[in-house]
Image (spheres, helix red, strand yellow):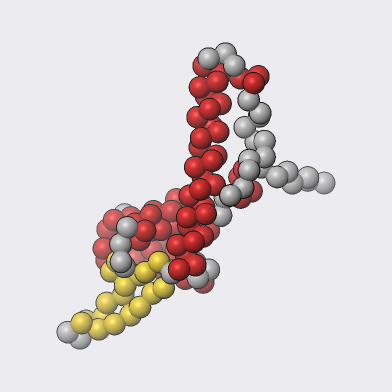
Length: 127
């Protein structure tokens, strides 16, 4: 029987922790919406791969996708939703805690003080 422990990793939102979705969310975070082609180029993804990740993010309510026509040409634009912004900010906060603790562990080990810090997987305070 597997016993699940409460570690800092448990608080990382798996929706955003996938590298391509992290790239998509990070790219959208600094924009007021991006065209599909722009997002594809920024993230270095294929049409199919980007579409698959956007579908996952859209189903979770993290992004909004709007399809319009400009001079009879289809244009797909992707936006962060309000829910997506909140969830992504929370994810970034937890990730920051995990990374800070890892940096402290490395520094502590280099300073010969590893026994003073809790194990890396120890529970972190959630914000």
